[in-house]
Every structure is written in C-alpha cells, then in structure tokens.
Image (cartoon, rainbow, N blue to C red):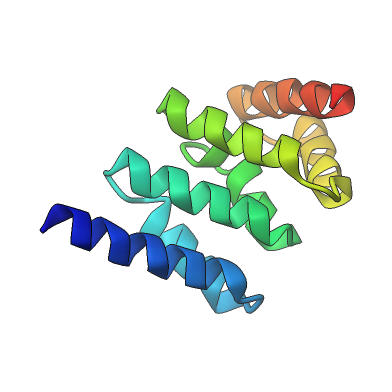
Length: 122
C-alpha cells in the first residue's frame, strides 16, 4: 500500500513540476516542502529547482528549513545537486547572490554563499 501511495505522490509532484503557473509552486511549497517525510521534501525541492523559475527557485534557496536549508542532509544535498545540474543557472545565481547580500538569517546566507561557490566551479 505504501509503495502505491508513494508512486501517486511522486506522480503528483512530477505533474506540478511540469506546470508553469504560480499555483503549482504554491502547492509544492505548502504541501511538499512542509511534509514530515524526507523523501517527499526531497522530491518537492528537486521539482521546484527543475522548474527553474524565479518563484520556485526562491523557495528552494531562500526559505529556512526548505531546499538547500533543509535540516535533512539528504534533502539539502539533493537540492544542491539539482541546482548544479541546471542547464541555465542564471536565475539561480541571481537568487543566490541576492540571498547572500540581503537575507536576514546568517545560516541561510552562508548556505547560499557555499552553493554559489559550488555553482561557479561547475
């Protein structure tokens, strides 16, 4: 039963990833990144990055406890790997720069600084 439920959740996350409307980002943020399940948060963060849109990238980069700032190393590293794999990194780098320069939380700024350095090397 759990495998079937996980497959359905994966399919929903993938479908939301394919939509470019703001509601798809909102649903991924509210439902996926707030899940207590690490796997769902990981899939959601990866989907947000793959959208490669300002609002979706901002969720994965600037929000404390989500994406690159998730408390689960697996979720954070998976999100970072997805950012590194982006073909067009322009918007992600802009958000990382803005986060380093302006975010109020030191830990979020430091994570963004580290990911930005990794992206510069890739």
